Image 1 (cartoon, rainbow, N blue to C red):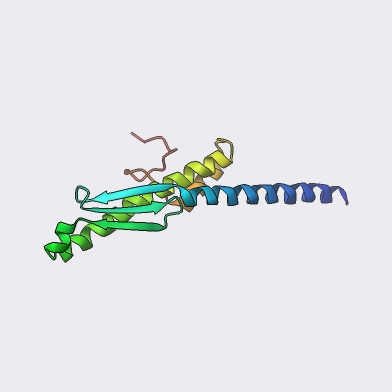
Image 2 (image 1 turned 180 degrees about the horizontal axis):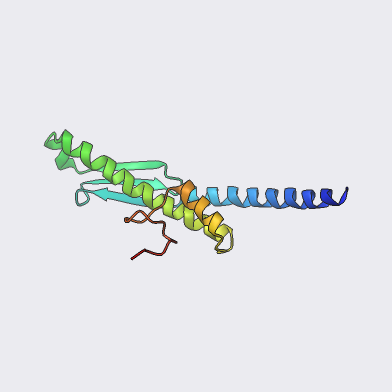
Length: 130
C-alpha cells in the first residue's frame, strides 16, 4: 500500500525539476530574437523567442506615399514570419530540455503546442511522403 507513495514522491520531485527547467527555458526565450520581413524588407518585425512583438519597422517611403493597403498587407506577413521563427526556437528549446530524446508522443505535443509545420504542412520531424 505504501509502496506507491514512494513512486508518487519521485514523480512529484521530477515534476518540480522539470517545472524549474521550463521556467529557465522561458527566461532564455524572452531574450532571444527573431525577425520577419515582407515586401523585400519594407516592413520588418522583431519578436522574442516567446513570440511577443518587440518592434515594427516600416519603410518611410510607404508612409510618405500613404500606402495604407500595402502596409496592411505586409505587416501580417512580416509578423507571421517572425512568429514562425520564434515558434521554431521554442520547439528547439523544448527538445534541448528533453535531452534530445525523440519520443513521438512528446514530439507531437511540442509541435502541436508550438504550431510548427514546414511549408508542406508536415512537422519538421516528419519525413516527407512521396
